[in-house]
Length: 482
Ligand SMILES: Cc1cc2nc3c(=O)[nH]c(=O)nc-3n(C[C@H](O)[C@H](O)[C@H](O)COP(=O)(O)OP(=O)(O)OC[C@H]3O[C@@H](n4cnc5c(N)ncnc54)[C@H](O)[C@@H]3O)c2cc1C
Image (tube, rainbow, N blue to C red):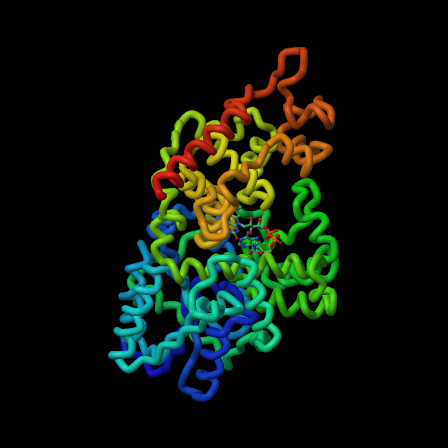
Protein backbone atom coordinates (compact mmCIF):
# COMPACT_ATOMS: atom_id res chain seq x y z
CA UNK A 1 0.00 0.00 0.00
CA UNK A 2 3.02 2.30 0.01
CA UNK A 3 2.39 5.78 -1.32
CA UNK A 4 4.85 8.39 -2.55
CA UNK A 5 2.74 11.27 -1.14
CA UNK A 6 3.27 12.16 2.53
CA UNK A 7 -0.21 12.29 4.03
CA UNK A 8 -1.17 14.67 6.84
CA UNK A 9 -4.33 13.07 8.17
CA UNK A 10 -6.98 14.94 10.15
CA UNK A 11 -9.30 12.75 12.19
CA UNK A 12 -12.63 14.55 12.58
CA UNK A 13 -14.61 13.58 15.70
CA UNK A 14 -16.16 16.32 17.81
CA UNK A 15 -15.00 19.19 15.61
CA UNK A 16 -17.20 18.88 12.52
CA UNK A 17 -16.36 22.31 11.12
CA UNK A 18 -13.97 23.79 8.62
CA UNK A 19 -13.65 27.24 10.24
CA UNK A 20 -11.71 27.49 13.49
CA UNK A 21 -10.52 23.92 13.27
CA UNK A 22 -7.03 23.67 14.78
CA UNK A 23 -6.39 20.17 13.45
CA UNK A 24 -7.26 21.09 9.85
CA UNK A 25 -5.35 24.34 10.11
CA UNK A 26 -2.10 22.82 11.35
CA UNK A 27 -2.32 19.86 8.99
CA UNK A 28 -2.74 22.15 5.98
CA UNK A 29 0.06 24.39 7.21
CA UNK A 30 2.43 21.43 7.56
CA UNK A 31 1.43 19.92 4.22
CA UNK A 32 1.89 23.32 2.56
CA UNK A 33 5.60 23.23 3.38
CA UNK A 34 6.26 20.15 1.28
CA UNK A 35 5.06 19.82 -2.34
CA UNK A 36 5.20 16.04 -2.03
CA UNK A 37 2.62 16.01 0.74
CA UNK A 38 -1.16 16.37 0.97
CA UNK A 39 -3.77 16.83 3.64
CA UNK A 40 -6.76 14.51 3.88
CA UNK A 41 -9.46 14.20 6.54
CA UNK A 42 -11.20 11.09 7.78
CA UNK A 43 -14.45 10.53 9.65
CA UNK A 44 -15.19 7.12 11.12
CA UNK A 45 -18.83 6.36 11.88
CA UNK A 46 -19.03 3.92 14.80
CA UNK A 47 -22.69 2.93 15.14
CA UNK A 48 -21.81 0.17 17.64
CA UNK A 49 -20.32 2.69 20.07
CA UNK A 50 -23.09 5.20 19.38
CA UNK A 51 -25.63 2.58 20.36
CA UNK A 52 -23.66 1.67 23.48
CA UNK A 53 -23.75 5.35 24.43
CA UNK A 54 -27.50 5.47 23.70
CA UNK A 55 -26.95 8.15 21.09
CA UNK A 56 -30.31 9.30 19.71
CA UNK A 57 -31.03 8.22 16.12
CA UNK A 58 -31.73 11.89 15.31
CA UNK A 59 -28.24 12.87 16.49
CA UNK A 60 -26.71 10.02 14.48
CA UNK A 61 -28.57 11.26 11.43
CA UNK A 62 -27.45 14.81 12.08
CA UNK A 63 -23.81 13.72 12.21
CA UNK A 64 -24.13 11.75 8.97
CA UNK A 65 -25.81 14.69 7.21
CA UNK A 66 -23.22 17.12 8.50
CA UNK A 67 -20.35 14.90 7.36
CA UNK A 68 -21.78 14.58 3.85
CA UNK A 69 -22.11 18.35 3.73
CA UNK A 70 -18.62 18.78 5.09
CA UNK A 71 -17.27 16.58 2.33
CA UNK A 72 -18.50 19.17 -0.19
CA UNK A 73 -17.24 22.08 1.91
CA UNK A 74 -13.79 20.57 2.39
CA UNK A 75 -13.54 19.68 -1.29
CA UNK A 76 -13.67 23.42 -1.99
CA UNK A 77 -10.65 23.74 0.29
CA UNK A 78 -8.89 21.00 -1.68
CA UNK A 79 -9.17 18.58 1.23
CA UNK A 80 -10.56 15.12 0.55
CA UNK A 81 -12.74 13.74 3.34
CA UNK A 82 -12.83 9.95 3.63
CA UNK A 83 -15.92 8.64 5.36
CA UNK A 84 -15.86 5.08 6.59
CA UNK A 85 -18.16 2.88 8.61
CA UNK A 86 -16.55 0.87 11.43
CA UNK A 87 -18.19 -1.12 14.21
CA UNK A 88 -17.07 0.59 17.37
CA UNK A 89 -14.40 2.86 18.76
CA UNK A 90 -11.85 0.04 19.06
CA UNK A 91 -12.07 -0.59 15.30
CA UNK A 92 -10.53 2.83 14.74
CA UNK A 93 -7.09 1.62 15.83
CA UNK A 94 -6.29 -0.59 12.78
CA UNK A 95 -7.53 2.14 10.43
CA UNK A 96 -4.61 4.30 11.47
CA UNK A 97 -2.05 1.57 11.23
CA UNK A 98 -3.28 1.01 7.66
CA UNK A 99 -3.13 4.72 6.93
CA UNK A 100 0.44 4.62 8.19
CA UNK A 101 1.20 1.98 5.56
CA UNK A 102 -0.46 4.22 2.96
CA UNK A 103 1.95 7.08 3.58
CA UNK A 104 0.61 8.93 6.64
CA UNK A 105 3.34 11.06 8.21
CA UNK A 106 1.27 12.89 10.83
CA UNK A 107 -2.10 12.62 12.55
CA UNK A 108 -4.08 15.64 13.81
CA UNK A 109 -7.26 15.70 15.92
CA UNK A 110 -9.21 17.41 18.67
CA UNK A 111 -9.07 15.93 22.16
CA UNK A 112 -12.02 13.94 23.51
CA UNK A 113 -12.50 13.87 27.28
CA UNK A 114 -14.31 10.58 27.92
CA UNK A 115 -12.19 7.87 29.53
CA UNK A 116 -12.47 5.16 26.87
CA UNK A 117 -11.90 7.63 24.06
CA UNK A 118 -8.78 8.84 25.87
CA UNK A 119 -7.53 5.26 26.21
CA UNK A 120 -8.14 4.66 22.50
CA UNK A 121 -6.27 7.84 21.55
CA UNK A 122 -3.38 6.88 23.80
CA UNK A 123 -3.10 3.50 22.13
CA UNK A 124 -3.22 5.01 18.64
CA UNK A 125 -0.65 7.63 19.62
CA UNK A 126 1.71 4.96 20.99
CA UNK A 127 1.46 2.82 17.86
CA UNK A 128 1.98 5.74 15.50
CA UNK A 129 4.82 7.28 17.46
CA UNK A 130 6.58 3.92 17.46
CA UNK A 131 6.27 3.94 13.66
CA UNK A 132 7.80 7.43 13.54
CA UNK A 133 4.52 9.19 12.77
CA UNK A 134 3.82 12.51 14.47
CA UNK A 135 0.62 12.80 16.52
CA UNK A 136 -0.95 16.16 17.37
CA UNK A 137 -3.98 16.57 19.66
CA UNK A 138 -5.57 20.00 20.18
CA UNK A 139 -7.70 20.72 23.23
CA UNK A 140 -10.25 23.22 21.90
CA UNK A 141 -13.47 21.73 23.29
CA UNK A 142 -13.44 24.35 26.03
CA UNK A 143 -12.02 27.84 26.21
CA UNK A 144 -10.42 26.85 29.51
CA UNK A 145 -9.35 23.21 29.15
CA UNK A 146 -10.16 20.88 32.07
CA UNK A 147 -7.59 21.19 34.81
CA UNK A 148 -6.81 24.81 33.98
CA UNK A 149 -9.34 26.36 36.39
CA UNK A 150 -8.66 25.12 39.90
CA UNK A 151 -8.99 26.35 43.47
CA UNK A 152 -6.05 27.93 45.28
CA UNK A 153 -5.13 24.53 46.65
CA UNK A 154 -5.20 23.05 43.15
CA UNK A 155 -8.51 21.20 43.47
CA UNK A 156 -11.36 21.03 40.99
CA UNK A 157 -14.14 23.48 41.79
CA UNK A 158 -17.27 21.68 42.91
CA UNK A 159 -19.34 24.85 43.04
CA UNK A 160 -20.19 26.83 39.95
CA UNK A 161 -20.00 30.48 41.16
CA UNK A 162 -16.30 30.57 42.16
CA UNK A 163 -15.48 28.50 39.06
CA UNK A 164 -17.21 31.11 36.95
CA UNK A 165 -15.44 34.01 38.71
CA UNK A 166 -12.06 32.41 38.10
CA UNK A 167 -13.04 31.53 34.50
CA UNK A 168 -14.03 35.13 33.75
CA UNK A 169 -10.83 36.50 35.28
CA UNK A 170 -8.81 34.15 33.07
CA UNK A 171 -10.80 35.08 29.96
CA UNK A 172 -9.46 38.62 30.17
CA UNK A 173 -5.91 37.34 29.71
CA UNK A 174 -6.68 34.53 27.26
CA UNK A 175 -6.24 34.62 23.49
CA UNK A 176 -9.38 33.11 22.04
CA UNK A 177 -8.90 34.14 18.43
CA UNK A 178 -10.15 31.65 15.87
CA UNK A 179 -8.19 29.73 13.27
CA UNK A 180 -8.73 30.75 9.65
CA UNK A 181 -10.12 28.26 7.19
CA UNK A 182 -7.49 25.73 6.11
CA UNK A 183 -6.65 25.46 2.44
CA UNK A 184 -4.62 22.81 0.72
CA UNK A 185 -2.75 23.43 -2.56
CA UNK A 186 -4.20 20.46 -4.44
CA UNK A 187 -6.93 17.91 -3.88
CA UNK A 188 -5.45 14.46 -3.17
CA UNK A 189 -7.17 11.67 -5.06
CA UNK A 190 -8.28 9.58 -2.08
CA UNK A 191 -10.93 7.58 -3.89
CA UNK A 192 -9.39 4.15 -3.52
CA UNK A 193 -8.06 4.76 0.00
CA UNK A 194 -11.34 3.71 1.65
CA UNK A 195 -11.19 0.39 -0.18
CA UNK A 196 -7.58 -0.04 0.78
CA UNK A 197 -8.59 0.48 4.40
CA UNK A 198 -11.03 -2.42 4.08
CA UNK A 199 -14.04 -0.63 5.51
CA UNK A 200 -17.40 0.24 4.01
CA UNK A 201 -18.16 3.82 3.05
CA UNK A 202 -20.23 5.69 5.60
CA UNK A 203 -23.94 5.04 5.11
CA UNK A 204 -26.54 7.78 4.75
CA UNK A 205 -28.84 8.60 7.67
CA UNK A 206 -32.63 8.48 7.79
CA UNK A 207 -33.10 12.25 7.39
CA UNK A 208 -34.89 12.49 10.74
CA UNK A 209 -32.82 15.60 11.58
CA UNK A 210 -33.78 17.38 8.34
CA UNK A 211 -35.17 20.38 10.29
CA UNK A 212 -31.68 21.20 11.54
CA UNK A 213 -29.52 22.93 8.91
CA UNK A 214 -26.08 21.45 8.30
CA UNK A 215 -24.43 24.07 6.08
CA UNK A 216 -21.66 25.75 8.05
CA UNK A 217 -22.23 29.23 6.63
CA UNK A 218 -25.88 29.19 7.64
CA UNK A 219 -25.06 27.90 11.13
CA UNK A 220 -22.45 30.62 11.61
CA UNK A 221 -24.97 33.18 10.38
CA UNK A 222 -27.56 31.92 12.91
CA UNK A 223 -25.02 32.24 15.71
CA UNK A 224 -24.03 35.75 14.59
CA UNK A 225 -27.67 36.84 14.40
CA UNK A 226 -28.35 35.49 17.87
CA UNK A 227 -25.38 37.44 19.26
CA UNK A 228 -26.42 40.55 17.38
CA UNK A 229 -30.14 40.54 18.16
CA UNK A 230 -31.82 38.02 20.49
CA UNK A 231 -29.05 37.86 23.07
CA UNK A 232 -29.97 41.30 24.43
CA UNK A 233 -33.31 39.88 25.63
CA UNK A 234 -31.92 36.50 26.66
CA UNK A 235 -32.19 37.06 30.40
CA UNK A 236 -35.85 38.06 30.09
CA UNK A 237 -36.95 35.42 27.61
CA UNK A 238 -34.76 32.36 28.20
CA UNK A 239 -37.09 30.71 30.72
CA UNK A 240 -40.25 30.89 28.60
CA UNK A 241 -40.50 27.93 26.23
CA UNK A 242 -43.14 29.60 24.04
CA UNK A 243 -40.83 32.53 23.29
CA UNK A 244 -37.95 31.06 21.35
CA UNK A 245 -35.62 33.04 23.58
CA UNK A 246 -32.59 30.73 23.59
CA UNK A 247 -30.01 30.25 20.85
CA UNK A 248 -30.94 26.73 19.72
CA UNK A 249 -27.22 26.16 19.07
CA UNK A 250 -26.72 23.18 21.38
CA UNK A 251 -26.53 20.52 18.67
CA UNK A 252 -23.85 22.53 16.86
CA UNK A 253 -21.81 22.97 20.02
CA UNK A 254 -22.29 19.31 20.96
CA UNK A 255 -20.99 18.10 17.57
CA UNK A 256 -18.40 20.84 17.20
CA UNK A 257 -19.96 22.41 14.10
CA UNK A 258 -19.49 25.59 16.10
CA UNK A 259 -16.65 26.09 18.54
CA UNK A 260 -17.21 27.80 21.85
CA UNK A 261 -14.38 30.16 20.88
CA UNK A 262 -16.38 31.32 17.85
CA UNK A 263 -19.43 31.95 20.04
CA UNK A 264 -17.55 33.92 22.70
CA UNK A 265 -15.59 35.91 20.12
CA UNK A 266 -18.76 36.96 18.39
CA UNK A 267 -20.47 37.67 21.69
CA UNK A 268 -17.61 39.96 22.76
CA UNK A 269 -17.74 41.71 19.40
CA UNK A 270 -21.49 42.32 19.46
CA UNK A 271 -22.16 42.87 23.15
CA UNK A 272 -19.26 45.19 23.95
CA UNK A 273 -19.35 46.56 27.51
CA UNK A 274 -22.78 45.01 28.28
CA UNK A 275 -20.95 41.68 28.60
CA UNK A 276 -19.55 43.02 31.89
CA UNK A 277 -23.02 43.83 33.29
CA UNK A 278 -24.15 41.12 35.64
CA UNK A 279 -27.73 40.63 34.46
CA UNK A 280 -27.36 41.57 30.81
CA UNK A 281 -28.56 39.02 28.27
CA UNK A 282 -25.01 38.67 26.95
CA UNK A 283 -23.45 37.97 30.35
CA UNK A 284 -26.16 35.45 31.25
CA UNK A 285 -25.67 33.65 27.93
CA UNK A 286 -21.93 33.57 28.58
CA UNK A 287 -22.72 31.99 31.96
CA UNK A 288 -24.50 29.15 30.17
CA UNK A 289 -21.42 28.54 28.06
CA UNK A 290 -19.42 28.48 31.29
CA UNK A 291 -21.83 25.87 32.75
CA UNK A 292 -21.02 23.79 29.68
CA UNK A 293 -17.31 23.97 30.58
CA UNK A 294 -17.95 23.44 34.31
CA UNK A 295 -19.56 20.06 33.65
CA UNK A 296 -16.71 19.03 31.32
CA UNK A 297 -14.16 19.94 33.98
CA UNK A 298 -16.11 17.88 36.53
CA UNK A 299 -16.24 14.90 34.17
CA UNK A 300 -12.50 14.93 33.58
CA UNK A 301 -11.72 15.33 37.29
CA UNK A 302 -14.20 12.61 38.34
CA UNK A 303 -14.07 10.04 35.53
CA UNK A 304 -16.18 7.60 37.57
CA UNK A 305 -19.16 9.81 36.66
CA UNK A 306 -19.10 8.09 33.29
CA UNK A 307 -20.28 4.98 35.16
CA UNK A 308 -23.37 6.97 36.16
CA UNK A 309 -22.43 7.05 39.84
CA UNK A 310 -24.01 9.89 41.80
CA UNK A 311 -21.59 12.67 42.68
CA UNK A 312 -22.96 12.75 46.26
CA UNK A 313 -22.16 9.19 47.32
CA UNK A 314 -24.82 9.01 50.06
CA UNK A 315 -27.60 9.41 47.48
CA UNK A 316 -26.61 6.06 45.93
CA UNK A 317 -28.61 4.42 48.71
CA UNK A 318 -31.92 6.15 47.89
CA UNK A 319 -34.65 3.54 47.50
CA UNK A 320 -36.23 4.71 44.23
CA UNK A 321 -39.65 3.25 43.49
CA UNK A 322 -38.94 2.71 39.78
CA UNK A 323 -42.52 2.07 38.72
CA UNK A 324 -42.32 1.05 35.05
CA UNK A 325 -45.80 2.12 34.00
CA UNK A 326 -45.26 5.56 35.53
CA UNK A 327 -41.96 5.78 33.70
CA UNK A 328 -43.70 4.92 30.43
CA UNK A 329 -46.37 7.57 31.06
CA UNK A 330 -43.58 10.13 31.62
CA UNK A 331 -41.75 9.09 28.43
CA UNK A 332 -44.93 9.30 26.37
CA UNK A 333 -46.13 12.61 27.82
CA UNK A 334 -49.21 11.14 29.50
CA UNK A 335 -48.72 12.05 33.16
CA UNK A 336 -51.75 14.31 33.35
CA UNK A 337 -49.48 17.29 34.15
CA UNK A 338 -49.73 19.37 30.96
CA UNK A 339 -46.38 21.16 31.17
CA UNK A 340 -44.55 17.87 31.73
CA UNK A 341 -46.49 16.15 28.95
CA UNK A 342 -46.00 19.00 26.46
CA UNK A 343 -42.27 19.02 27.21
CA UNK A 344 -41.91 15.27 26.72
CA UNK A 345 -43.84 15.50 23.46
CA UNK A 346 -41.53 18.29 22.32
CA UNK A 347 -38.59 15.99 23.03
CA UNK A 348 -40.16 12.99 21.29
CA UNK A 349 -41.26 14.98 18.25
CA UNK A 350 -38.31 17.32 17.70
CA UNK A 351 -35.29 15.80 19.47
CA UNK A 352 -34.81 18.98 21.53
CA UNK A 353 -36.30 20.30 24.76
CA UNK A 354 -36.16 23.77 26.26
CA UNK A 355 -33.84 24.08 29.29
CA UNK A 356 -36.58 25.15 31.74
CA UNK A 357 -38.57 22.11 30.65
CA UNK A 358 -35.57 19.80 31.04
CA UNK A 359 -35.42 20.96 34.65
CA UNK A 360 -39.18 20.53 35.19
CA UNK A 361 -39.43 17.08 33.58
CA UNK A 362 -36.28 15.82 35.30
CA UNK A 363 -37.52 17.04 38.68
CA UNK A 364 -40.92 15.46 38.02
CA UNK A 365 -39.44 12.05 37.18
CA UNK A 366 -37.24 11.99 40.25
CA UNK A 367 -39.16 13.91 42.88
CA UNK A 368 -42.77 13.22 41.90
CA UNK A 369 -42.52 9.74 40.42
CA UNK A 370 -39.52 8.66 42.55
CA UNK A 371 -37.77 7.06 39.62
CA UNK A 372 -33.98 6.73 39.51
CA UNK A 373 -32.52 9.74 37.70
CA UNK A 374 -30.41 7.41 35.57
CA UNK A 375 -33.55 6.14 33.82
CA UNK A 376 -34.31 9.70 32.77
CA UNK A 377 -30.71 10.46 31.88
CA UNK A 378 -30.69 7.49 29.53
CA UNK A 379 -34.08 8.32 28.01
CA UNK A 380 -32.93 11.86 27.26
CA UNK A 381 -29.82 10.54 25.54
CA UNK A 382 -31.89 8.24 23.33
CA UNK A 383 -33.96 11.20 22.14
CA UNK A 384 -31.86 14.40 22.27
CA UNK A 385 -30.23 15.72 19.12
CA UNK A 386 -27.83 17.63 21.39
CA UNK A 387 -27.31 14.68 23.78
CA UNK A 388 -23.93 15.18 25.38
CA UNK A 389 -22.69 13.16 28.37
CA UNK A 390 -21.24 15.91 30.59
CA UNK A 391 -24.17 18.35 30.23
CA UNK A 392 -26.83 15.65 30.40
CA UNK A 393 -25.32 13.92 33.41
CA UNK A 394 -24.70 17.29 35.07
CA UNK A 395 -28.27 18.44 34.38
CA UNK A 396 -29.81 15.22 35.69
CA UNK A 397 -27.67 15.12 38.81
CA UNK A 398 -28.50 18.78 39.41
CA UNK A 399 -32.24 18.12 39.17
CA UNK A 400 -32.03 14.94 41.24
CA UNK A 401 -30.01 16.68 43.99
CA UNK A 402 -27.31 14.02 43.68
CA UNK A 403 -24.73 16.11 41.84
CA UNK A 404 -22.14 18.77 42.35
CA UNK A 405 -23.63 22.19 43.16
CA UNK A 406 -27.02 20.52 42.74
CA UNK A 407 -30.44 21.81 43.73
CA UNK A 408 -30.91 21.03 47.45
CA UNK A 409 -33.06 17.92 47.84
CA UNK A 410 -35.85 19.80 49.61
CA UNK A 411 -36.18 22.18 46.65
CA UNK A 412 -38.93 20.45 44.72
CA UNK A 413 -40.49 22.05 41.66
CA UNK A 414 -44.25 22.27 41.72
CA UNK A 415 -45.07 21.45 38.08
CA UNK A 416 -48.32 23.42 38.10
CA UNK A 417 -46.79 26.59 39.55
CA UNK A 418 -43.86 26.25 37.15
CA UNK A 419 -46.34 26.00 34.30
CA UNK A 420 -48.29 29.09 35.43
CA UNK A 421 -45.07 31.03 35.81
CA UNK A 422 -43.20 30.06 32.66
CA UNK A 423 -46.04 29.38 30.22
CA UNK A 424 -48.61 31.86 31.59
CA UNK A 425 -50.90 31.78 28.57
CA UNK A 426 -50.47 28.07 27.96
CA UNK A 427 -49.12 28.79 24.47
CA UNK A 428 -46.40 26.17 24.68
CA UNK A 429 -48.78 23.59 26.11
CA UNK A 430 -51.30 24.18 23.32
CA UNK A 431 -48.58 23.79 20.70
CA UNK A 432 -47.83 20.23 21.80
CA UNK A 433 -51.13 19.15 23.34
CA UNK A 434 -53.90 20.11 20.94
CA UNK A 435 -56.38 18.14 23.14
CA UNK A 436 -56.14 21.01 25.63
CA UNK A 437 -56.85 23.77 23.12
CA UNK A 438 -60.32 24.47 24.55
CA UNK A 439 -59.06 25.13 28.09
CA UNK A 440 -58.62 28.75 29.12
CA UNK A 441 -55.29 30.26 30.16
CA UNK A 442 -55.93 29.45 33.83
CA UNK A 443 -57.35 25.96 33.58
CA UNK A 444 -54.84 24.71 31.05
CA UNK A 445 -52.15 24.24 33.71
CA UNK A 446 -54.35 21.89 35.70
CA UNK A 447 -57.21 20.64 33.51
CA UNK A 448 -58.61 18.37 36.22
CA UNK A 449 -60.67 20.96 38.09
CA UNK A 450 -63.41 21.27 35.49
CA UNK A 451 -66.85 20.22 36.63
CA UNK A 452 -67.47 18.49 33.29
CA UNK A 453 -65.51 15.25 32.93
CA UNK A 454 -62.03 15.95 31.60
CA UNK A 455 -60.98 14.32 28.37
CA UNK A 456 -57.36 14.72 29.37
CA UNK A 457 -55.10 12.06 30.92
CA UNK A 458 -55.76 11.77 34.66
CA UNK A 459 -52.90 12.91 36.90
CA UNK A 460 -50.76 9.85 37.72
CA UNK A 461 -49.58 11.22 41.05
CA UNK A 462 -50.60 13.75 43.68
CA UNK A 463 -47.81 16.33 43.86
CA UNK A 464 -48.27 17.22 47.55
CA UNK A 465 -48.11 13.55 48.59
CA UNK A 466 -45.19 12.85 46.26
CA UNK A 467 -43.26 15.73 47.77
CA UNK A 468 -43.50 14.24 51.27
CA UNK A 469 -42.25 10.89 50.00
CA UNK A 470 -39.24 12.54 48.33
CA UNK A 471 -38.30 14.30 51.54
CA UNK A 472 -38.52 10.99 53.40
CA UNK A 473 -36.42 9.15 50.79
CA UNK A 474 -33.64 11.72 51.01
CA UNK A 475 -33.78 12.13 54.82
CA UNK A 476 -33.37 8.38 55.15
CA UNK A 477 -30.02 8.33 53.34
CA UNK A 478 -28.79 11.62 54.76
CA UNK A 479 -29.51 10.33 58.32
CA UNK A 480 -27.82 7.00 57.73
CA UNK A 481 -24.71 8.99 56.89
CA UNK A 482 -24.43 10.56 60.34
C1 LIG B 1 -31.80 17.41 32.78
C2 LIG B 1 -30.98 18.20 31.80
C3 LIG B 1 -30.35 17.57 30.74
C4 LIG B 1 -29.57 18.30 29.83
N1 LIG B 1 -28.95 17.64 28.79
C5 LIG B 1 -28.16 18.34 27.93
C6 LIG B 1 -27.47 17.68 26.87
O1 LIG B 1 -27.53 16.46 26.72
N2 LIG B 1 -26.74 18.44 26.02
C7 LIG B 1 -26.62 19.81 26.16
O2 LIG B 1 -25.93 20.45 25.34
N3 LIG B 1 -27.24 20.45 27.16
C8 LIG B 1 -28.01 19.77 28.05
N4 LIG B 1 -28.66 20.43 29.06
C9 LIG B 1 -28.43 21.88 29.23
C10 LIG B 1 -29.43 22.79 28.49
O3 LIG B 1 -30.74 22.40 28.76
C11 LIG B 1 -29.23 22.81 26.98
O4 LIG B 1 -27.86 23.05 26.69
C12 LIG B 1 -30.04 23.92 26.32
O5 LIG B 1 -31.40 23.72 26.56
C13 LIG B 1 -29.78 23.94 24.83
O6 LIG B 1 -30.55 24.92 24.19
P1 LIG B 1 -29.88 26.23 23.59
O7 LIG B 1 -28.77 25.87 22.69
O8 LIG B 1 -30.98 27.06 23.02
O9 LIG B 1 -29.28 26.90 24.90
P2 LIG B 1 -28.83 28.38 25.25
O10 LIG B 1 -29.67 28.83 26.38
O11 LIG B 1 -28.78 29.26 24.06
O12 LIG B 1 -27.36 28.17 25.83
C14 LIG B 1 -26.19 28.24 24.99
C15 LIG B 1 -25.36 27.00 25.14
O13 LIG B 1 -24.83 26.89 26.46
C16 LIG B 1 -24.74 25.51 26.83
N5 LIG B 1 -25.61 25.31 28.00
C17 LIG B 1 -26.73 25.98 28.31
N6 LIG B 1 -27.21 25.57 29.50
C18 LIG B 1 -26.38 24.60 29.94
C19 LIG B 1 -26.34 23.79 31.11
N7 LIG B 1 -27.24 23.90 32.09
N8 LIG B 1 -25.36 22.87 31.22
C20 LIG B 1 -24.41 22.75 30.26
N9 LIG B 1 -24.40 23.51 29.14
C21 LIG B 1 -25.36 24.42 28.98
C22 LIG B 1 -25.24 24.69 25.63
O14 LIG B 1 -24.11 24.34 24.86
C23 LIG B 1 -26.11 25.70 24.89
O15 LIG B 1 -26.24 25.44 23.52
C24 LIG B 1 -29.44 19.70 30.00
C25 LIG B 1 -30.07 20.34 31.07
C26 LIG B 1 -30.84 19.59 31.96
C27 LIG B 1 -31.51 20.30 33.11
